[in-house]
Image (tube, rainbow, N blue to C red; front, side, top):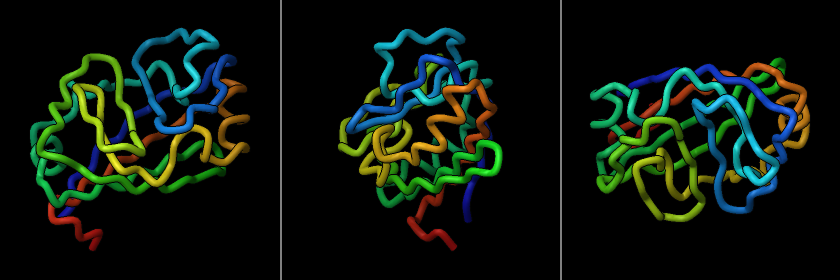
Length: 145
């Protein structure tokens, strides 16, 4: 059984989407050109706002996280792993990583996408300020059912 969370955010004119190992959404509303991993700002949730049930599901050692990035008519699926070492307690940020590094912002490790590998049409849409819906599905037993 999966547990779902939804996060609404938007793009920003400084979105570049060029980071090689991560991508991020944040509750912060401004973005400097240095934030090359950020794909969404003004999110209605940070890691610390996720439900206890979602955190528990993602904290299983065998958990799989399936993230859908929905922007206009563009949908991108990202598959990541959960980890018992994730604290999911950061107030503003959620970060997907291709590595296995975890901190309070990390929501997914061993992700099959980073900002650089996301479709350029998605990045262009978000650079124009478009809305982004982030749908998170945590499968505690790794089974995407």
